[in-house]
Figure 1 (cartoon, protein in one colour):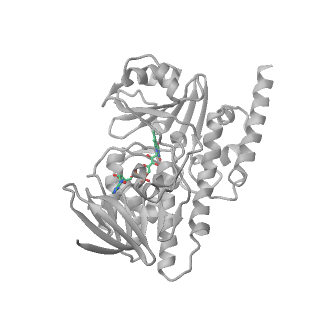
Figure 2 (cartoon, helix red, strand yellow):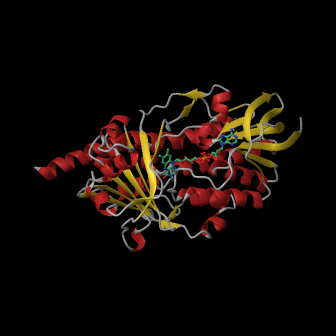
Length: 416
Ligand code: FAD
């Protein structure tokens, strides 16, 4: 059986895998990616956060991404019939990017993988990592091609960036139950989106539906198509009018005034797809000779478009930590990697929980919010969740509870 060797083997060529590989290769270490699919391939998760721009830049990929002329996303709009809150990313507390892009992922992931290859990364396409053996001195991974032929790759370290493939969580028994209840997502791409004009065109819309903060996303692309999707508990989708997913998704459009108007001429580009069980968790992010990156570690919920940003942040941190280790430093991975990653995940967990228990919509739709608070929240929504100068980052839980209570009192006063 042929044996290939490298410094770091990476499972999966999504944003986490490609960017981690590029960073390792730029530092002079041999990175090999094994990717089971052929690109371009469809994947959901199309709205980036400004923090991504820093991470793309560090991975040497920003120029290639900018050359694609994706639509510019300079903020988000949260809507619930008459209520509206617009977030402009350039009005944030933390210094950093004021915009990013909305990206069809088939194209975006191909650009990142091409860029990694141009930087010297080897990608072994259409082969699947099927077994991993962790030894005292490194890793032996078995990969299998489409004909069932197997070969072995030996490396000093392995990054699992396999997304929902969840290779190491499955093989090493690292799966843990998610803290979030089961929700479904039903989505498609459409033409016929009646878009707002000018600089507002590229903002993501989050339209809140009447029950339990089920919501719709509307993400416009430069290619004339728009991604639309519904996130809701299973029984909400079950109850929607319609005999199939297309009809149910269209019925959901009718439930929020702004979505109804904007999507009145929508034509589906492909039949609506349903996915469930996307909230995942693991017992640990790292162990001897391995680290879990991106969705192969923990994924919470799509509502704040944090998935790709957290995937690339984890890739960036894991690569930098491994480079230090390869350069002779004694590394405490729990401190340097797991705790760092956990900070970002926990802040988004606070926001996701507060979204579904109605605290965050109450805050968002409250009028008269002090400017400093708006800016602090904006930083988090832009993905700058490691800025400890931001009070909303430092004390996210307390900040959200206090703000929700204050917003509710103000709303009551206004009504009376
Ligand atoms: P992926 O992009 O999933 O890449 C993993 C790769 O690994 C795949 O190409 C796969 O083929 C490969 N692979 C799997 N198993 C193997 C194996 N055994 N061997 C070899 N290769 C393998 N995020 C956002 O940032 N913005 C959004 O608007 C957004 N919306 C979302 C909406 C929904 C409904 C959901 C569920 C998620 C959304 N996300 C969003 C999250 C986003 O999709 C993910 O966080 C992101 O794709 C994770 O990137 P990744 O690199 O970790 O994994």
